[in-house]
Amino acid sequence: MNELNSLYDLIGGETALRALVNRFYDLMDSSPEAKDVRALHAKSLGQAREKLFMFLSGWSGGPSLYIEKYGHPRLRQRHMPFSIGDIERDQWLWCMNRALDESEILPAVKEHLKIRFTEVANFMRNKLET
Ligand code: HEM
Image (cartoon, rainbow, N blue to C red; front, side, top):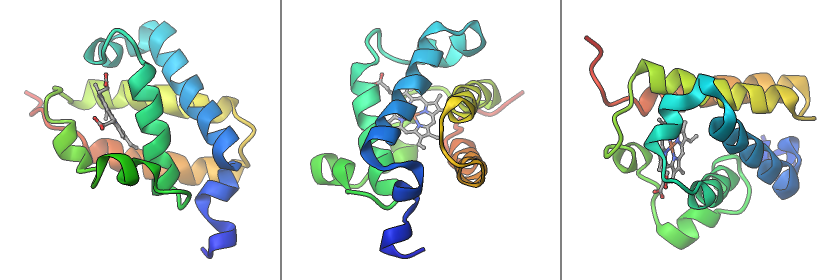
């Protein structure tokens, strides 16, 4: 992908990315299907919304907002304080896949994002299932 065709542009740039992240956290906040993953987060989702938007901006080839403000993401390490297993991963992905399905993002781009998010979410697990 060249700069004109970054994933960031294909998603629809800042406006569409912010809308996706906001819908993702609205779903997490209001859906019984996501109650365990919601419980891991702070009472206010304000900081999580801003940080995920900033991270995904750079991750998708747009402005590196997160790195400029917080340095290297070290995403797995930053998730270590939270106990994340299959249930939490599945609930996170349930919210994200639903937010994507509801969005205006092109179907091929949606499918690509679902695969990439699944990879990152799998990597974030840190709890051994018994
Ligand atoms: C697999 C399931 C996941 C769980 C249970 C989870 C949970 C959390 C929690 C509880 C926080 C702290 C939020 C707060 O301030 O209240 C957080 C932060 C964050 N998460 Fe996740 N997360 C998951 C997957 C992901 C994935 C797949 C991504 C990226 C694609 C991601 C990106 C982030 C970022 C950028 C932050 C902010 C980190 C920081 O600067 O502190 N997370 N996550």
